[in-house]
Structure formats: structure tokens, C-alpha cells
Image (cartoon, rainbow, N blue to C red; front, side, top):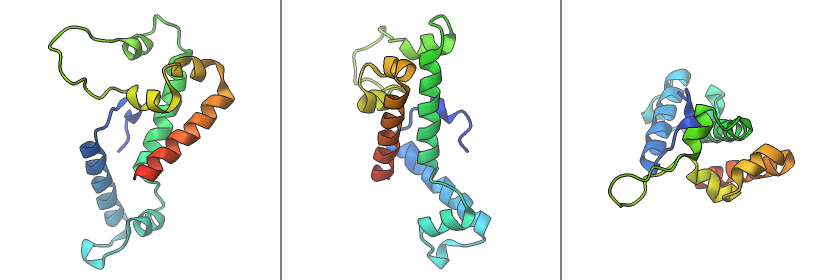
Length: 134
């Protein structure tokens, strides 16, 4: 379900659709139906699965740290730092790094590359922030 999720930039609608899909898979794995009215937490505990957003955020955080340590001529690093300037002026699309900048600030790449302990603290904040939202 989370194949290459570290590169995704999810909207609220997409997050909701993934949550619905995860709950459906959990019901299939546990053999329960919607009519039994089991809670989402019960389903996750019974199926022994984590909420997908937590796994998604962990993967994204680890990928961010890997990108920050790459040499500058690698494609993954270039694409991450790329700012498209061509086209109409409209509301900017949600970008992969927007969530990271919200938590770590604009110096996120330097922090991920050089400050291991600080990055771990920011990762916990990032994970707890998403858990509180969901």
C-alpha cells in the first residue's frame, strides 16, 4: 500500500482515501464487516497494523535524510531542490518538501545532513503532529 510513499505529496482527500482503503483491508484481514461496528483502533490492533500515516511519515523522514546526504549531481537531489518557474501564476501546488519545511524550517536539508540528534527530535515532532491531526 505504501510502495514508494516517501516521494508522495498527499492532499487531505488522498489521505482520507488511503485511510478508507486501509480500514477496508483491515476488515478483510480480520473477517469483520461494517455492520459489526468495530472501531478503527480495534481493527488496527486485531490486524496488527499501524496507521498508514505514521508509516508514511517515517518513510518520508528517512528519505529526506538520505536525500540531504546525497551529492548534488544526483537526480533525486536535483529534483528535490528544483523550483519550476514557467507557466501561469496561480496558487502553488502542494509540494513534497512543504510538510518538511513546516516542521524543520527552510534549513531542513542542512539539519538532516549535519545534525543527527536534532533531526531525530524533528522527526518525532513530525510524527506526533500527523498523529494529532489524524
